[in-house]
Each structure stands twice: as structure tokens, then as C-alpha cells.
Length: 338
Image (cartoon, rainbow, N blue to C red; front, side):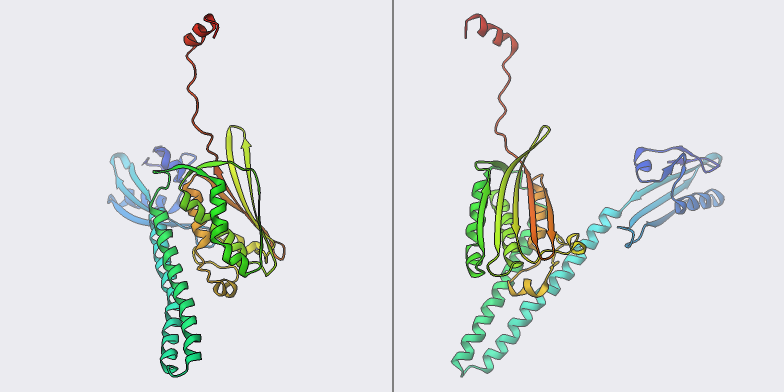
């Protein structure tokens, strides 16, 4: 944007207005205004970083402002928003820190178990016990590494590039098959109801993983003898057609203050319960990425002590659209009595 001698904005592009840099024909960010005035007085160009907002009020915005004095006391100001890049870097750092922390637990447990096993080499019963514990921890470690790799792949790949028609019935059936042992082990009843024969466009394996994670999550946060239900239905809104897959449980539920964080990586509502069931804290984050990559959305209803419902909404595959019949051919057909 170009600022005149009286701090009026002479011209500015649309991004400057969207950013809030220009308001009512004036500069809307006081730090940038101060920088413009100093450049006008000193006659020297300058570059400064500007931080807007705070972590408490919401994500901070980081701007880089470059100002250049011009003729007749005008000043050229070029402001770039680096917030998204910096947030991405911060997210990567957080992921590395979280992964390091999460890996320490199973790795440390296996080290202790190995040392104990070595000390109890002459006790067959102890050997069997600690060997079994090592198997549990190694399985947990394998699942954690696998989900980290899966999440990384989801963030870099577009599943719709090689998309094909996916049967929702097959997705639900495979999810039920993958969680069968957990359902039986926790004595949880399982049911599938709703519309049949619906299809979506996407990646079968990714969608199956997403629904499997939702069912597994419902099992983990429910007591023995609980109920888990999957409901599939077609939803039409104006010209849009959707497939909704809802996974409902009557488990412990989620407090309102925790619902906003439930899709964060490594976040667990009940850490002890999740650890006991081998949860990694990545399942719902994977679900969120899969659904978003397929052009859908996920919502949550939950009440503490009553249970939860996670609802995935995906664009329905309506099949190929028939080509319209040209008007002249249609008229010719009527003349022939077709």
C-alpha cells in the first residue's frame, strides 16, 4: 500500500484490507503506522516484525513490514503475513516433542522389563510373566510408530488423486472385523443400522482406518457390557448429498471443556484408561485428517456419564451424470415416434 503525507492510505490491494492493515482509509495496525512515520521522518527504509494478538486471545499473527520513503512524503509499505508458516513450524516442533515423550514410555518399560527378565532367568514363571509384558509394550510401540507414519502420510498425500468408488457397507464391515476381538474382550454389544448400498469417492483403506479408530475409541472409553452402534444414513441438503456414519457409545462421555481438544495429536480424555487399552492418542487426529482429505467433516456430541456420538459426513457418490440429449436429436426422435 502507499501512504500519503498525512497518514492517509492512497492505494492498497485487497489482501491489505483483508489483513486489517487498512481501515476506513487509514492504517489499521498502529505498529505499522509508527514504522511509516519513522521512515517518513528519517528518510530511511526499514524492516520490522509485528506480532498481533496473543496465545490467550487466539493464535498470534506474525507480520513482516517493509517501508520505503517515496517522493512528497509518501511511504510505500509492504506487509507479509508469515503466521501460517510459523504455525506450521511450531506444529512440527510440538510433534517431535510429543513423539519423543510418547516413545519414552514403551521404550523405557521394555528396558526395565529386559533387565528384570535377565535377573529372573532361573525363574520360569517370572520369565513368562515379564516376556508377556514385553510383548504388550512392543506391540504398543509398534502401533504408535505405525500411527505416526500413517498421520505423516495423511498430511502429505491426497487420497482423492487415485480415488475410486467405495462401498460404505464394506467400510463398516471391515471396521467391525478389525475391532471384533476388542468388542468380545470388553463384552461390548455392537450393532449396525441405517441405509444400505451407499457409496462415496475415496480411499477404502483410509476410510476403513477412520471408522475403525472411532469404533476402537468407543470401546476404550466404555465399561464392560456397554453398547456401541454404527448408524449410516443419507442426508440431502439443497443440491448437496451426504453420507453420515455415526458411531455412538454409552460410555464415560467427554466433558465440554475437553471436546475442543479431542482431535489434537496425543490428547487423551482419560490417560490411564487409554494406556490400559493400548491407545496412542493419535486415532482421532487420524480420523480428522482422513475425513478432511475426503471433503467431509466430523462432529461430536457427548455428555459425561451418558456417552458420545462421533458423526462423519462425506460427499455421497451419485454415480455418473447422464449426458443431456441434444435438442435437435430429441425432436428428431419424436418425429420418428421414438
